[in-house]
Image (cartoon, helix red, strand yellow):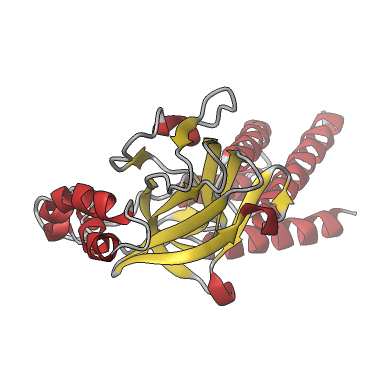
Length: 304
């Protein structure tokens, strides 16, 4: 029985050491695909309460009243950093007779993700999801939506929105920041349906790249804000306590191993951006080690 426990303990340590190799700048499992919420919005003319579209509160929303046979202005939303995205989604309150224009912001400007009727989009749990064309993965730092009314007037509400993707180390170039003021000119140009001025205005909207250039006043590319992960130092301390508990056969070391393992479970469950498989594998390893430490303690108490 004791040999089996030793074998299981060695396997557990190997698993944890392997997980330690799956790290991102000193953190385990910190890179994963998930929904990323915007953190701010660009000037969105005539939209009321744009921040309500990403505050994780379905009691608030961004609102707009679209005139008959008119496009709304863009609701332009900015992410915290660049991500490799495959989808964007919106939770609307909107009439079926509406038409949508969904776009994402790449380093070279705006790219269209969807243009078409609302009724052609399938709702997923209340959200309307729009995939990047050809199931590709685009590097983006913002997205936008505008709505066309095919009736006399149209009330539009956007309750929540997000982009599906993963973080990247790339960031916007700081020196492009001063281009930001050109954005409002593009906003006006886009409002002209099928108008030549609207096409010219698109160049102005590219000024948004400056606004989301992470305020690079020094013009130096930085690193992305890392999602919280399980620190490597904790893994090292946990392994050290485990080795001490087994070889020294110390009662206090085993108690310490139980406490550190419980802490590991709490940390693993609290990490938002850890891959689920890695997360629950680590929880299982911590739970096994807690059981191992308890057996060690019981064995030592029986000897007394």
